View (cartoon, rainbow, N blue to C red):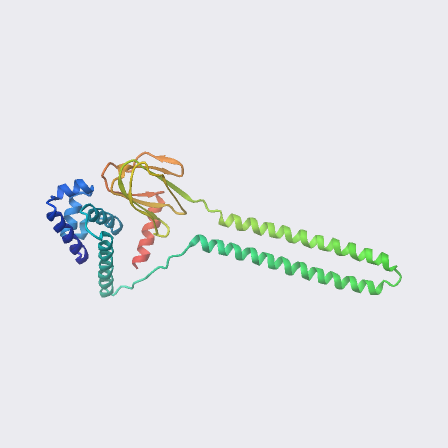
Amino acid sequence: MSEALTKIGSLIKNKRTELGLSVKDLSEKSRVGYSNIVNIEEGIRDELPEDACLNGFLKILLKTLKLDNYDKLLIDYNLARESQEFINLSNSGRHIKKFPEKNNLQNKLDSKKLVYLLVAFVFFVTVSNSFLQNASRVKLEKSDANTIPEKALNKQIKKKLKQTEKEVITENKVELDAKKEELLNSTNIELKKLSVKVIDTAWLQIVSAETGKVLFEGNVKPNSSNLEFSDKKGFVLSSANAGALELKADNQKIQTIGKKDELVKWYYPDSAKEVYERLRKEKEE
């Protein structure tokens, strides 16, 4: 039994009783399942869904009961829950490992800029060295060419320098183009795409399977703009009203993921489940 859940559950129960509502009345008003409300009010954590979905239920119930500062109440609950989990984890002797959030796209762009700068620097040094070497060689040849008229010698020097410079530039341009192509191919990763159309009021959460980052969470209403998401490995979708959603994955329409008022967790593609579970396991270790 969770102390934090017991506290906020008692608050919900007291407010419901004060308003003269039964559990069934509150379930109909909020569209949160009857059994979920009972378990929340009694603080029975094991019978409830995971934290992200549970937070959605709590927010809906607090808002439905018109409790003042319901956002602050939800923040206080999560702080108390995390504090209790931290204490339990410490007492168990397990190591607590935090993963700093990284902006993968920014890192990739910075790496790309660095590669271009490095290639440009190598190109500049190569051309400069070749030019200096050829200039030195031409100077030596000029000192030995006493029998050649000065004007003819200058023409030969300019022609040779121009030809050498052209060869160096052409050679390095081919090398640079090859490196550019290699870099573009290495960063051309096909992203998974998900489009969500809402046809009825529902609570929705979209999570990146690769990073575990919440891409979207909250209540959605019908006739709103379609929600569009992109990710390398795919998505984990949770909804408390699965029948309210119409989905397209990589431009392919998904027939259905659940019925009206049904709580569903759905993975796209199927491989996203393995990626997400592995990430959660790493965070728990």
